[in-house]
Image (cartoon, rainbow, N blue to C red):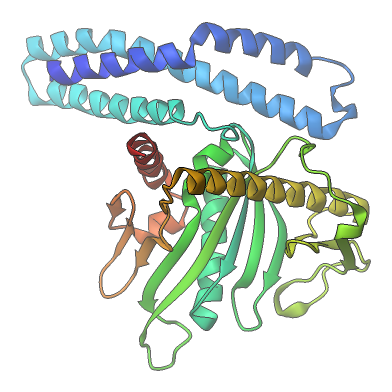
Length: 365
């Protein structure tokens, strides 16, 4: 046990050096001053950004302070347990140590989020793939999974657009998650997800395999680096729709923007006015185009260097409900035997293992 405690302290010391509690305290003071400004809510988007960043920094500093205190108390707990000499006291120390190892592991993963866009909010687009009705239902299960994950972390999740399938489920959905480091955290979820189960839509009860694609892009602050000529855009307005194509709005407030040169299409029907929906859709479009631009630049550099290596396979995670119960990430090999918990938003283990896998792959390349 002493070796585990020593290793934990060493890891946490490195984390403190990276996250820098003094820097966090300074940022909290600065954000607190901005949050106390009387005209803060004159710009609701900026106000939300400031208050969200403040809450995140406060939570981060509180976590560091709490772990520091509990690590200092570990020696006292071990000494008391040794003096008592009973299993209950030792079990208490073991439980606290395991909890601290888990929490320090979460903090360690956060230090690995050092990409250019990692600190930004995220926009997740889920599309049903092969598998018919089962695939549409699977896409809706994934949408719920990410919403529940966000709720569990007290992150704001907004469904910008949903295209419902005719029989059940969804054809696609776009979800915005406003939280610091949401993109860095959730970008590991991008790829093809596969579901294997006894189909509830098949009268014969046969096992069905279906697929859904998940795309994750960072939501740029203003996405000013992408200039889009009006002539490159086709803007359509329509009424928001619900399951079965039913209209849920009496005005043409929903907006669909098509970027003609690339074919990228973005829709938004979450806001109440056409102007708000257009602004939200344009922001997501610019974010996607900027990411495509950067990916093309990186691909060109790799091509010139003569090292083209695909780092993401078509299928990155399998959710198996029959004949056995398992969810497995095919990149990190992290797996659990409780699909219900995963679909209910318990994704942290997969995300942390995925981020570590990605960082390891980057070091090798």
